[in-house]
Every structure is written in structure tokens, then in C-alpha cells.
Image (cartoon, rainbow, N blue to C red; front, top):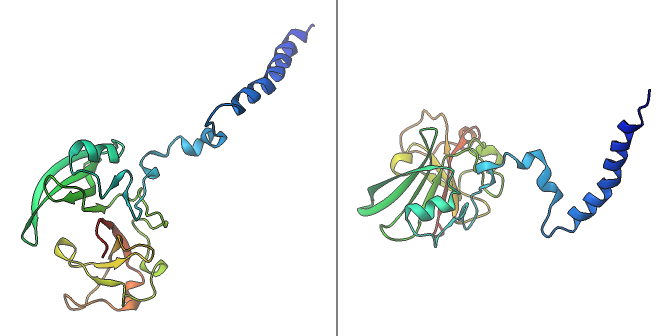
Length: 203
């Protein structure tokens, strides 16, 4: 039996491999890490809440559907609306996925983005905080960093991020004390992030 033809193809493949590698290494901007399977499924997880904004949305982003869609990389279905906040008219866009509201982007009508509420657990802050992160991992006590939430968030606690004056975390948990009273630090330790909030203006 003659099996040499089978191995001749392997030899050609092995001989061609160094040439292929040499050619790839000279490609401009090529990164071997891009071949990792972990990068094939990055999706919206590549977006982060930073001191400057969320994903591609910043304080200079016009509050229009096209600009917001571009900033969110087109991963969400947008739904627009109007509301009042402290007597002022506010325009907003709800970013929907799987029929759930994942983000709310708001600001003055015909203005730029002023606030982004993030409820998508796949969008962390740049410091690694995600929806579900416990209070105990970020704070030892509420004094100096936290206050009662307002409006629809009145039953929750909002705390300024340790690393940013533009980002805050909204915490939710069990509390059976008087309404409007800040829970004790011991109680807050088990509360978890329910929303990450970015504001164009520093708190």
C-alpha cells in the first residue's frame, strides 16, 4: 500500500504555514486576539457607562433618534416620548430589547443628551459595577455618598459613584422602616444596584 500521497499534502500545508503566518503578521492593524472566540459574541457587552457617557452617547450627542441609535450601535429598538420633570418639559427615548426597557436617554427637546438611565445588566460601568452589584462591594456607609431617590425611584437609594461625579448607582432592597427614612448601613449592605445613572452635569 502506498500512503505517500496522503503525507505529501500535509507537507505542503506545513510548508505553507510559515508563509501564511509571515503574511498575516505584516497586515496593518491585525490583532491575533481578535481571533479569540470570546470576541465573537461581544455584542452590547462592549458598551460601558463611563465618566463621559454610555457607549457612543455623550453630553454633545443630539437628542435625536438617528444619533442615539448610532451611539447605541443599533442594538436596541427606540421608542420616544415626552414628560415633565420639576415643571420642565423633557424629551426621552426608551431603548427596548426583548420588549423590556433597557435604557432611557433624556434631555431638553431639540437639545443634547442630559441623562441616561441604564437597566441593562450587560452594560457595566467602566469600574466593573453592573446591575446586581451589592452595596457592600462599593460602600461601607451611606453618609456622604447617598440620598433618597426621587420620583419613580423614591423607594430606593441613590449613591454617587466613588470614581465619578457624573455617574451614580441606584440601590434597591428590603426595607420595612418609615417611608422617607434612610435605611441603616447594616440594612443597605445587602441592597443591590438596580440602575446605573449618568448625568451630563456633575452632581
